[in-house]
Image 1: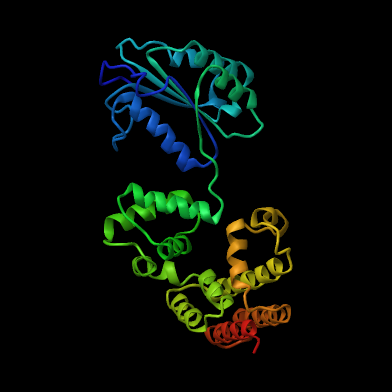
Image 2: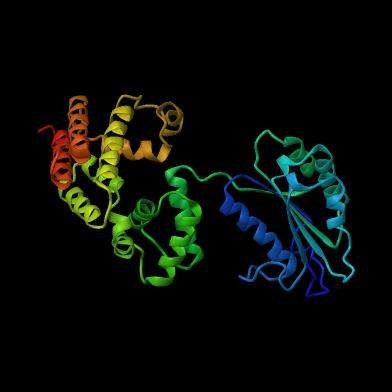
Length: 338
C-alpha cells in the first residue's frame, strides 16, 4: 500500500528478521503487531501498523508462487521502507521456502521481515535456516494448563493497571472459558467497567448468568458437596433458559470425571495423565480437589442418580427442574457418604 511517510524501518527498534513460532493465535498476532509497531515508530499505539508509516504486505506462505516474494520486497517507487509478514511458513513450497531464507540472509536496511511458523516438524528446515541467518525468534507456546491460563489473566490485568485476586481469576475462567481471545476481551471489559480489586463477586455480578449458571458450574458445586450453591446455580440456570438436557450432561461429565481421576494413580502428574484420561491437566487438578470425601461406592450411586435424572428430563418425568434438584441433592449426599 502507498506509504504515508518517507521514513524506513529503524533497525534499532525493529529487528530486520523475526520468526514467530507457535499456534496460539492471539499471542502470535500480538508478536506480529509489536514488530510492526516498532518498525513504523508507532510505539505500540492502537493504530494499525503501516496505516501512516511503512508499506505492509501480509501473505500466506502457501499462496506465494516462486518469485512473488521478491516482487513484494522490491524497493517502493515512493521511497520509504517495507514490512512483509509471511504466515505459516511451514506450508511454503520448496522454492518459496528457499526465497524466504535467502531474503532473511541477505538483509536490507529498508525491509522488516516477519515469518510465522506453527512450530511442528513440518517445515522445520525453514526454522533452522532462519536461525542460521540471525533471525530473532519469538515463541508463542500454547496456553493449556490451568495455571498458565491463570498467569495469562493476571498478566492481562497487570497490563491494564488492574489487580484481580485468585477467586476472581478462577471465576473468570469459569465464566468465559479457555479461548485466549475471549479471556483477553473479558479482562479488557472488566478493567474498563469496574473499580477496585476484581474478585469472584465482581465477576459474578458482571457476568451474572454466565459466571454462575452454566451446567458445568452446577456440576462442580454438586461434586464439591456444596448443596446450597449447587441448587442456587441450578435454579438460576433454568431461569435464564439453560436446557435441562445440557445440565444433566454436565452432571454426567462431572461424575464420570470423579470416577476416572479417582481410579488413576495419585502419584502421577496431571500432565502425564491427560492423554490417558482424555482430560486437560487443569481439569484433572480440579477433580482431584473435588474427590475429597468421595468413595467408589458414592461415585457409583451418583452415576445412577444422574442416569435417572437424564431419563426424567428427556420425557419420563413431568417436571425437569424437580428431577434435576433431586439429582443434585443425591450427588451431594453420595459425596458425604449419607
